[in-house]
Image 1 (cartoon, one colour):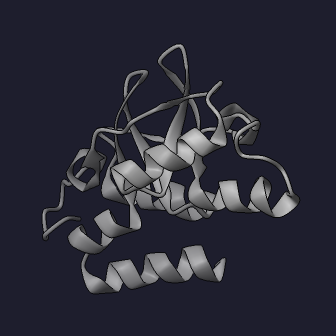
Image 2 (cartoon, helix red, strand yellow):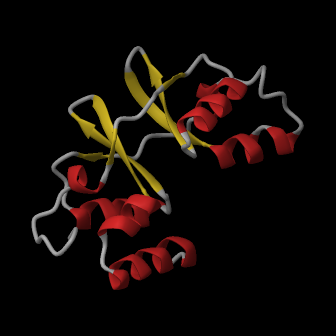
Length: 143
């Protein structure tokens, strides 16, 4: 429920738009895109189809910390699957998906096209404090 509206959807929560990074692009390019767009995650695409998402943490943990070179590792190498919601999903469905998969960013799809992302910042703007606190507890606490 955003701002007390009982029929709020993922579209109401999301930040519109999302720059995709092609799966063949390198992780250093992904990091540049994240920096330039002021985001911590990017959808990874193959032929305009979203195949997954990578985060700044993925780059650090799965590449840099393992001694790999982000200039030679591809964005597609870090993709392990795609968790998403349709634009008309309820807020509760979006939160449930995020909690179930222990994720803090959720792509919002209209058909096969990504139209936005739901992040913790979006949740903080739109959810009542008690609902936000419950989400944080479930995602970070593993409940």
